[in-house]
Amino acid sequence: MEKRKVTFRIRRFNPKKDSQPYYQEYEVEVVKGMTILEALQFIKDNIDPTLSFRAFCRSAICGSCSVKINGYPKLACKTQVFGELEVYKTDILTIEPIDNMEVIRDLIVNWDSAIEKMEKMRPYLIPDPEVVPKTLDEECKVYPNELKKFDRFTDCILCTTCYSVCGIVKVDSNYGGPFPLARVYRFAVDPRDALKKERAKIGYTFDMWNCVRCEKCADVCPKHVAPVNGIMKLRGLSIDIGLKNNPGARHVAAFYKSLLESGMLNEVLLPLRTKGIKGVLENLPMGIKMILKGKAHSPIMKPIAEHEGLRKVMKAAMEVE
Amino acid sequence: MGKYAFYPGCAAKGASKELYEATVAVAKKLGIDMVELPQFSCCGAGVLEEVKDVLDIAVNARNLAYAEKEGRDIVTVCSTCLLVLRSAKYHLDNDDDLREQVNEILAEADLEYKGTVDVKHFHWVLLEEFGEEGLKEKVKKPLGGLKVYPFYGCHTVRPKDIIGYEPSENPQSLEKIIRALGATPVSGVRRLECCGFHAFWPAPQISMRLTGLNLKDAKESGADCVVTPCPLCHMNLDANQGRALKAIGENFQIPVLHVPQLVGLALGIEPKELGLHRNFVSFNFV
Image 1: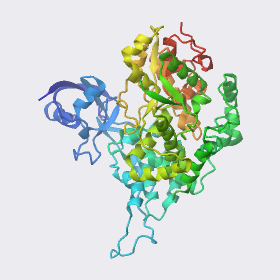
Image 2 (image 1 turned 60 degrees about the horizontal axis):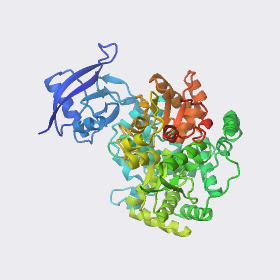
Image 3 (image 1 turned 180 degrees about the vertical axis):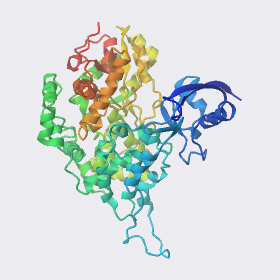
Image 4 (image 1 turned 135 degrees about the horizontal axis):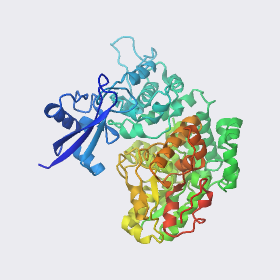
């Protein structure tokens, strides 16, 4: 069986005695197939019993063992050591606690901030009395086409990996974060829910338009939930219920209008269409520099070839139920 | 040599005109068979999904269908266009009901989506067609001594389920290109971070702060310049550089180049032909 000597460089921190975190190295002979979690357990059992990390199910379902491996967060139980050595072409792996949460000890973080935020966003079904029967004698059916809208989002295991990589969580304390906002969407499209699209207002309150669509949450999710897609759809629902007078929603309308007019984005009119006169004034110095550099097109754009076909496609798509 | 349909995207046709110029010049110099299709529309930058899911997919199925008619893989120079087009393709190829529904919509324009073409980034094509060694052989003016910070941004690598060209944890395509050109890639901790472009309108301060931190990391890594495969990252890193650095209380300048601009210089193409005079922060490499 293939074996390799691997150095695990682990970030240690015990707030009761350490003034700051430090790194400790452990050399382990790793057998092919061994997971990061098995390596951590080996270190704890054989080298250093003080090493602290979380682990319960060992089957990628409880979501407790997310750690950063060379800077990228993954579930330790689902990640094989050899795979990581291959990605980074190395024999040294740095293991650290995930970001955006307080470290309790070594690789263990305090999830409270993320979970408390989610709790404020009412992430549970509020039954619609028109749909959900009052007694258990009757069924409450959810049809496959209805389930398809939110099925993927129910796979979230609350591991907080997405929350830990979110750049907006880091800089905007009011931002809801990836998995909580995706959960809001999940209930907003559940036919049994009483609030339905009105839940988009919760997303709005928790700064959903500040999502930069960096796709990190989609990339790191061990369950392929892609919370960002839920956030995008929740934004769409907010427009449906009339929350249109904000830069995010107006930006969407500007794109739609541009495609109908010429098929290409009208960048020159974008500041005006997205933020009104304020947008023009804020971006005027930049706009002038762009013109001087020859980087601005005419505000009246020539339509693309077969533009009428694009308009027909857009019209037909908008008519789909 | 593959046959490609050039999808420049709106930025390269407008505010990042220099990217269009540099890409066309490099493709010509390397003899890449690349034709721009006049029917291509804006991909909607993911924003159309917020109007309606199926609208986003249908508009991009139309773009894909035109490339299929020509039998050419789409090659784009915009990372967001790359993600949006690949995402539409992914959903169309993996959901029979959706494909059927979208084809009914496309029939309005006498088009059909079959799923026969791929969508690639321009710098992937450079590596696929020539390889690191082959590209090195084409270099006329090696960029010896130049330290380049490879700023990938987001949609060139993420999410892996849709992009999947290289490991999103540790991509190396830009490093390979930089090395092939005779320059040295510098390693920075923020090379895979977000520039914040897509939150520029609702949250300009957040957007500028993220860009500022990326520029600061490039500077601290000892880079002479930054190179990026995305015009939207470029807009924030170059045109908005002053505002971004102000947002984090810094004040310096660092040139930011599009990938085809850097490649073009090494191939011996004149800076003017690569639109270098249009960059906000000037770059003078002798």
